[in-house]
Image (tube, rainbow, N blue to C red):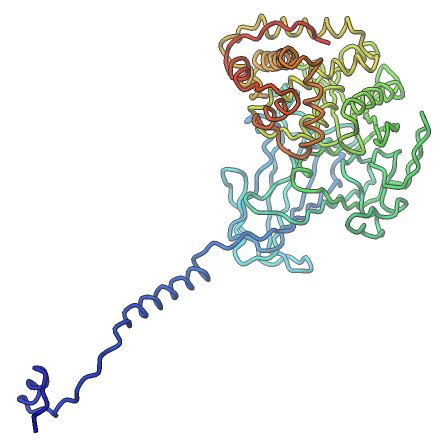
Length: 547
């Protein structure tokens, strides 16, 4: 019989005296790939569980505003953050007016703790100064609370720029802009926002949001306002009325629905709504009137050389005219607060206005007469109120678009006053023409600085601010005239503004959006024109017609 053949390895083992080897089976040749695949799966699992950044989970924020020391110009705010907190929670420090480096409001005395579900203080949390404000070490915490104070009396007396005195003590209390007093977490999504107001002295209080809870009353469910008798403070105290309240007759000033409670709960829609607010408490008088579906309120903390009722009628006429132009009100309440301007520094404004949410603050000289209110201050009231549509409903978020927001608002404010019968046409033309001639056509910055760049820096020096605003008005008038020539339409910018409000409410105003709406309304592409006259340094043509 033939001998079985041996491999070289079998023969070597036999010679060495080893056991005869059995024939080897063919090995599985893919173990290497299986091992590599298992290693890859292990690494992927490790990354998923450890290395991958977790998807950010929204947190709930509760702010408690304590007015116990408001009569002395001091506020204390508690911020409670709960949910899936990061290891470090960055909080933006209130920046002062528009982020200015001087003056303004500054928060202080921060104290932070981890909190139990029932609100008890557990371990202290470390608070560090960060480039944007404060940083809380919240590792392992599901609920953290920070208490800080704001002394509104600390704005340096030498800082005489009225723009830095929006948040300040007033008669019997304080006036506070939301963007100056509410700390905001950075890079953390928020779902659920509550503002508690502790008002032990029961100070009259102006707020921009509907009251959802009265002391001992029920919380309103989503989409439904609580019972008006419990949830709203009505017309007489300067609060937004709840749905279902009877509309007052013309000229009637209804009594308050209820006395001011010691504790209130508000639910701002989001952080932008919270910070875009003007809260005032103290010796406040209010009057209210109806303009369509909107409640128009006048509030003040001092006696003027004109009657409150006359001022309220002026405000209501402006509101009705602007609502008629756009077709509806941007909110169901507009509050105009008249306050004293006592600052007379180099950057002085005789009349200064600020629009925050549904509130308009107008700071006047204390000796303002009725004639000056009509001839001068009314333009500031109309301007700031117009921002409810252009700037708030259609949001101003990009500095590069301030030329349009401010220019159109200034121009249309004069036109609204004329339509309301408050200004005569020749007076409106005289006011606008003199301003454009002085501050734009004969300004030393003409040809050196574009209108868009000048308007973008709202806290620049007086010459640049005046140039930016006057140039912006000139640009809007020139743009309207160019569009009219190209399209054959009269006042085409009117339809552009209405379309922006109607179709882009709640969206930011961008150059792309403005150009698209202009083309949709008129069929004209205006990009090259804007590059030349607004974003470039070419002088704008003198306006042909201002009204």
